[in-house]
Image (cartoon, rainbow, N blue to C red):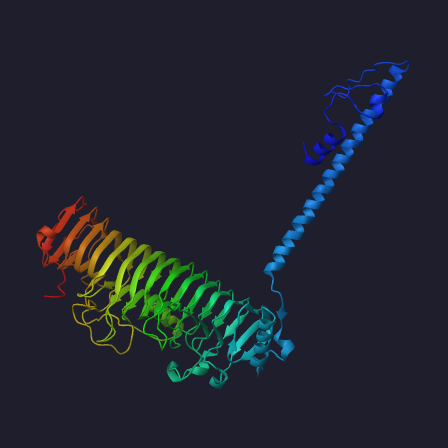
Length: 589
């Protein structure tokens, strides 16, 4: 029974044997459960009175029911009003307390007048009021540096464009949007930020000495939100959160000319709890690059940790996803998932040169296409450069640099297409540790000239690498070297090219200890090399492999004693030699 009706019934007709008051005076009695059981007890008019009183009781019962229903409807209305008031209260708490329009402070939005002073005034007044929103209406707002402050949201409405000044004198410091030690700040909206990057490049895209880079610089900030905005033509790096905690970048697009110099996309630097998602990034340098730079006065750097990148499309002239080269601090507990990488020379890269530790890094559900032809089509140039869909490297930057460490890194559910090679290598004095590659498909669409190739270095000036640490010339689709603990599971290599085949291993491992290969599928290219080449490798276990028909040698070895290899449960076609010395590329005679 509804609450209001139950309340009314209980109030009007309590369960008791006798009515009190007026009804009791007439000597009438009702049964506890039935209104119909009215009985006269005395008097001449007992019968008529009983009928009259029964009718009155029924009328009272009907009126009570009407009252109960009215109470119930009133109660429901009151509850509804309370819910609406609570919803409006919650919504009001989320809405900015104040909205400030830079036009009220003199901004014109004509694309000619420098509106920087007016925009900054609106930000300052907003911050002094306790926070709120600085709202850019449709228009073209030209400005130099603007400084974002705590509890301020910069909102770019549809049709609003924030143009960076073409004069370096208008930038103090050298950034378009700058914040330091601020909290609860946001850059949002469906408008555009245009850095006017071409004003800071010379001929052939050579950068001038000073330029506003990063375009958006956030130092020591907390709870930062950048969402939905379009960023175009950055003069240098796009967004750098440096030593920040709690950075949320969602739904943005960033496009710069692929020829433009050093135009990184998003560079989380020594920051924690960073979330990048649902974004499109096309740049002339690294699309997303994690760094651990140290401040000029510091001797160490903060770690870059708890970073997630998901659901992004990444296009780059260099690396789509990169860790390093600045690596004075550690990289920990970062995940990269559900991303599309295309038209990029390096799909995923790590350059650890300054002593940092890399651990707990995961790459999953990613497609990588490293076609240089894509870049040539975008830039109108003809370039022929080596491609590396996955590249991991550990070395010292200089003689006095500390040696870092890479361990506990996994790659899973990755599809690769291109003519390049995967190169994963540590050094003889510090092997990589505990790496895994699971469910990796590599479709090789061409052959690079690799005989005189050297590994990428990531920086212009660096000491020459020794052969023990440089496996750049190895002819293989997958190259693994100087690793302790390598698990390869469900690896598949497809040679998909009409060019004359060159001799290539599908997988090469040099100086790898504790190597497990399970579920390999594929074969070599050409006729001289085995499907899998092993050089100076220890503790090798291979199972559930199925080399292609026509493969002459399954495993070729150099400097690997027979007792170091265990083959079991493999499906070898007729005529395939399981193991043979001399069918492996020899990198270190």
